[in-house]
Length: 403
Image (cartoon, rainbow, N blue to C red; front, side, top):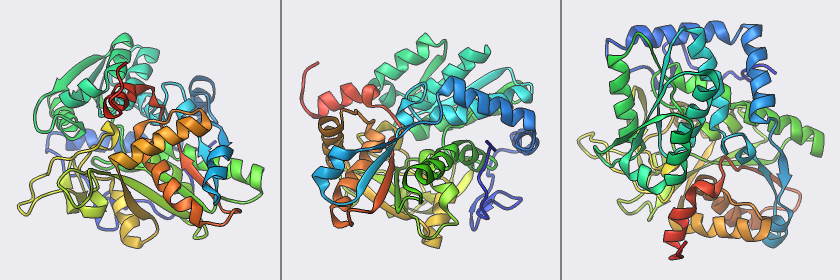
């Protein structure tokens, strides 16, 4: 299987998707960014690299992940037929391993001997710690102190895998702040360190590279749909914080106008309050973490703090390709509140015996709202990009249940 799908939606030589993207980094980092770009350009056309990645995806991660008919949920909604792309069944429990395997192989190809990463919900941190353990590289994970508290199961998993966890106490103590600290670390360790970014944001070539490694999700959905239905799905739904699982699902379908695509942001306590993380719904273009995209910012351009029950969606920006897809009108972007996501989590558990993470529970909430208004032969695929094990303490607190 090739690394990327064919699409005309690729960034230009400066890393821009239309007006969004680029690389806004410190001068000391520019040579390393260019080194990453050149190394990736060579790797993705190297058959040995592709074969090695394919082998790990299949035999280590467990791909392809199943495409599962959520029949009881579909029957209860009495509308579209709901299918789950079950990336929560991957090794480590989320889609993040897809990207981490690709980048760790690239880092070793570049001769890097130390890996750093940021994490919010902890799934990218766990996946990074996992591949570092597998290949014997030291690993440092930056994680907001707030997220350390609400994602204790994943923090413990990272420690068991040998990672050093650095809680970040600045700002809102969430994903944004973890990424800030990781970039600061990278500037001071440019010779031996590789920054393994987990989302489809950051300076070019990271948005493109993360998308390419995650596009295995959408390519599998296309192949599985043709095998099972003899046609492509009618619609695709995915949650998004920075946007990696969503762009991985959407990218192979961008050229097919018959497939509708919906990205679901975190509305927190509501997009009309100050407590949400809906950057495409309520944000404006600006620069954050090395890229120009939609951001939640005040009138002076200062980044606003975000709020979401889901640590993985608690981010004030979005990957630049999503910003461009919004401008083009190719993808519809909506938002879902904490309350709606929590209700969708409970409904999925009750009807399908599946505990989705709080991140894809946002996508499920949108499915539950819209599927009843669609015909029975409409095929809707939702990416279940993570397991809910990591969220049990957060959910128990929200439901006021003692565990």
